[in-house]
Amino acid sequence: MTTGTLNELKPFLGATRAAIRELPLYNSGLSIDYVRKHYGVEKIAKLGSNENPYGPSPKVIAAVASAAAEIGLYPDASCDSLRAVLAGYLQVAPEQLIFGNGSEDLISVAVHTFLSPGDQVVTFAPSFGLHVIWPQSVGADVATVSIGVDYKMDVDEVMAALTPGVRMLLFGNPSNPAGTSISAEDLRSILNHLTPETLVLFDEAYLEYAMADPSYPDFHSILAEFNIPWLMLRTFSKAYGLAGLRIGYAIASDPEIIQLMDRVRAPFNVNRLAQIGAIAALEDRGYVDSVVTRTVAERERMRAELELMGDTAAPSLTNFLFLDARTNASEIARRLLPGGVIVKPWMEPAFNTHIRVSVGSREANDQFLAAWKALAR
Ligand SMILES: *Cc1c(COP(=O)(O)O)cnc(C)c1O
Image 1 (cartoon, helix red, strand yellow):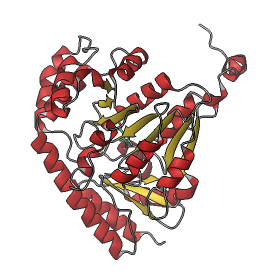
Image 2 (cartoon, protein in one colour):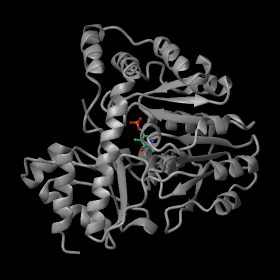
Image 3 (cartoon, helix red, strand yellow):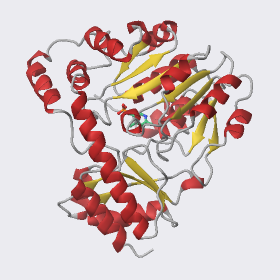
């Protein structure tokens, strides 16, 4: 067998479309193993990926373990059992739901289903990387509207960006990385301004945390008031603690949206154990509630400790804090690594002095706070 040399491959690689060759690589964060090996530290505070430090419910672990012997069989391609449970829980038609290998998968499926090269997309900045990278991968033009220094969205600026012909408006709410939410009134203004030419993709990955605040609006009901196409994304990766299992879902305004996405997704995109784990997770609400309560308490403790050091984090409805280090964020993140602390530095030019730190276990949060305090800034 012979393998092609780089030169022989050049005509092939060079013919790859520019949208792919010029695409940035998603920054998926450093692993515990990597930091252990490179810095020789044993105890790692992994606070860069918004993982749930308490893990899944023990009932999920039991359900997944007892199904492990069945992994010789393909999973149910349409997730029927999970679909029925979730549709009942959300009070939506089963046909309005689609499942993915994490909700990231569904961002990709939606983008590849509905966008063509040259289409216009609007999102907010700072943004979740994949909200920009996936549309760019199909050659769409992504315009970003920046939140202000107060971490709030200027709704007039959003509406100005939503010119006729914009094909998709997508954003995380609460925002990753800012942790803040749009108001019900502002969302209604935006939806009033839109026509059915635009799909609204509302990524609500942190819903369960946000709901701890009684004033967090029911955005699903608000979207449903309007006669425009929308997709609402949710995940089992965060408050449910199933990030390693990979499962997320979307609710669509219309079953026709799901039917089109079903043509694009991989047929077996949700593995057998994920389907079983998700059902068990939905059936243990008490566990999720206790995760959220503990996380919110830790988050506010971290905020108060940071305040004492003169650092103000954005108001957060999530399991992370976003704060201005007032110096290069990548540099700060690098300087935290020898102490075993992993955070996510923000790279978007207007926010590149900001870091995002997840709310972890009490011990991990203390490790972060001590390392942060020790930084001479
Ligand atoms: C974490 C996160 C997701 C979820 O990703 P999964 O693929 O479900 O693990 C989606 N959107 C945003 C904004 C997130 O922060």
